[in-house]
Length: 199
Length: 386
Image (cartoon, rainbow over all chains, first blue to last red; front, side):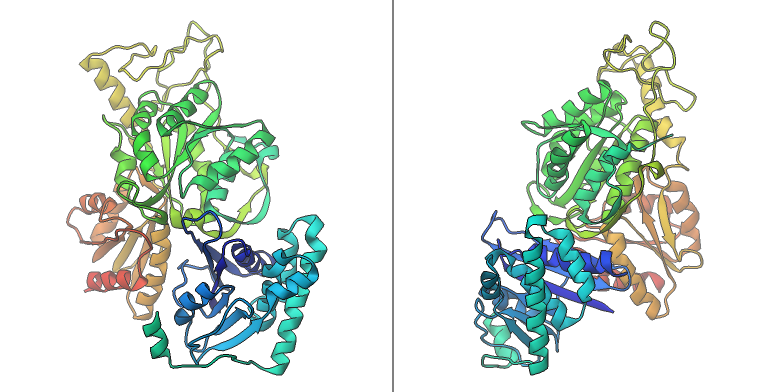
């Protein structure tokens, strides 16, 4: 079982930390292997941020991700740039308030969540990445609830622990409800060929 | 051997990158001083060291440039501490002069180079293995040192400890040749109990001041060391020097000194043949690789084995000194040795020399910026198997 994952957004959203939490969950709290790499831009903050995560039950040999099985996008730029790379039949997780899905390939399974809005309801926009980790955990089943929650607890400061656990649970719950309802690709879908030429 | 100081060892299971693991390795190995001029992709090593060192009585100084960093650390070694510096390509070039000084003065220390694409400023955030020949021959004059290459964050920890141990044992500057990919890759790293980490202690003077000579070779040709301020006569110079350390510039002394400095390494060839081999016995083709490239090669090997080819992997952990004897023995037993590197073909020159025409030697060069596609290595394996 080898899964290639990309999580992308802009700097400050906690994209790298969300990949770190997920990888940590697999490598430290399940008996799996996880390798995380990240793309560095020249900007100190505010630019594009993207992390790649390879998880497996075997040691990971090739560290990079070219065609992810699962793509998580938290910005329009990330959606435009990385969606064409997702494997045939792959999964796309979207921050629905920040991404307008145009030219969506038909082969993808798409799940969206207003992660930032949920984080704001909880009192701190900052935890949107942990909402997303909960959502990821719920939808993909790539890593167990317990392992993910343990990794969240490892990675956040003690005084924000409760908030982060709530954020994780809200994301997870949102995913569970969505799975009951079934997937819902929202925007127009066009052929992959058109999409590729657009990029 | 002694053991690591438990106050400095972050025992446990971590999810950290190679740079962080290297820093923890240095702390576990007993390094209490680093001087550096931070540069991508090595910055995280010293960033972490700067925050961790004061908690264990250590010091980090951000110097004005790499020349200063590479000389400050040697001052600290002669004052009694284990020291290192961390850099990447452009900084490594600036450090060359002082790497020669460390070799000439037999100063035990570690130079960490997190390699990035070059030449010049090249690709600051992307990997390469283009400094491998520089690690061996970069400084002027003739010298022999040790270069280790890790291929995982776990090894960035383990081998940093080894690097410090070898530096102390042989009294040479050890080159720790990481790359951007390994340095910035985050994986599980297990740091053992301090009592399980063996350290090679400094070879302190066993004779009292007056009788002790600073560069008198021991039975293994390595001299003992006295630090400044301990009552010994500590005269350290980059000039050709006699056993007291005083300049003595003539052909006889040059021959004696330089020959000994080479021999202390060459005599230990067996100990310094540090490799990992897998499936080499009975293989038609053996991939010889190091660092991240060895790891990527494993996928190519899996693909080749699926096609029924007999392929093995010889991963060089210690690249310099080159495992000459091992290659001379291996070459007649195989059809081909294949060497992928993230450079245009550097260590393969040495591989070809040692293979001595007894088998095909196939270079799989790559200018860096990313790692090899396994398919490219597979293609070379298939050519080698014909």
